[in-house]
Image (cartoon, rainbow, N blue to C red):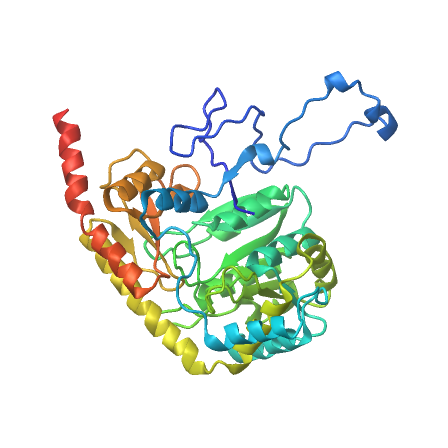
Length: 453
C-alpha cells in the first residue's frame, strides 16, 4: 500500500501541499475524509460510453487524490540520501532465526514455488492453531477458521472488504498506525478517532462509548501499538469488548508486536475474552518476531461465518502468501523453543533502554513504550514549526532518521512528536545513539542564532 491519508490542514487553497521536503501537487479537487462513493449517473452504460471524448478528463480517482506516499517510506529515502542511520522504518535489521531461513530454502529446493490453497498450506494453518491455543488462549479450527495472509496488512484489508460497507464508521485509537487509517479511507470507510492520553496512552473514561454512532460497525485495536508502544490492559480490552457487544460491532485486532512486551507484562488477545470470539478478527504474523518483514506472511483467525468471504477477498487481491516462506514460518512456530521468545524480550528491552537513555540525553523526552519497538519522543526543543520540519532538522543535524508525529495524529496533535524505531542491530543502534548525543548542543545553537537574527 505505502500510502497515508492527508490530514486536515495539509492543503493550501491553491491545491499545493504545504511547504515541506515532501511537497506534492495535485490538480484534482480534494474531498473530505470519509466521503461516501460518488454515485454513477442514472443513464445506461450505453449512453455513458457515447459521451463525446472531448468531454472526458483523465485524472486520479477520488481516493488517490487524497493520499500521499507514506511519510515513513519518505523519511527512509531522505535518510538514504543523507547516508544516515534509519530509525524511521520498522524494517527489523536483526537476524532471521536459522530454522526459519533453512526451512524456506529447503522448500524452494523441494519445488514449493507455486500457488498454495487460498487459505494457506495445511502445516502452517495447523501450527498457527496450536500457537493460538498455547500463546493467545484462542481455540481455532485450522480447516475453517484460519487464513494465511500477505502480512497483517493483507489480513486487515481483506477483512474490511468482507465485513464492512462504504460509509460505515470504524473507531481507531489515536495515535494510530497510518496503514490502518489509509486502508479504511481507501475503502470509503470513515475512521472515527478516539484519543489516548500520553505518556501511557490510557483509554480514558467514556471516550470510546461517546464515539459510537448508529453508523459504527467496528473498532480497531493495535496491541502492542505502533507508534506509541501502548499495551492495552485486560481492563481496557474488557471495556472495548463490552461496547462491541452492546452495539454489535466487529473488533479488528492487529497483534503483530505480541511478542515484544516488556517489564514482565503479558499480552492479552481481545479474541480470548468472554463473549467476543464470534465478532473478533484476530490478525498477526511473523514479520517482526522472525525478522522477515519482506516475506509477507501473516495470519488471520475469525469465525467460520466470516472466513470464506475474507479468504475470497484475500485471494482476489493477494492470491496467497509466498509458498516457500509459509513453510519457513511453520518451522519457526513448531521448532523454536519458548526460550526464543524470552530471549527476544530480553534483547529488545535492552535496546529500548539504549534508545530511551539516548533520547533523554539529547533533549527528546521519550514516552517509554510498554511493548512493540518504537518510541514517541517530545521534540518541542528541536527547530521547526511542525513535526516534518523537526524530523528533517534532526536528520540534518545528527544523521538519524525518525518519523514525523503527524503521520499518526490528526489536527496537529503530533506536531511536537517524533517516532524512533529500535529494531536495529546493536552496532547500528549504538551509532544512532552516539549521533543523537550531538542534538542538544546543535539545537541550542540553532535557537540562539534565531534569537540573534
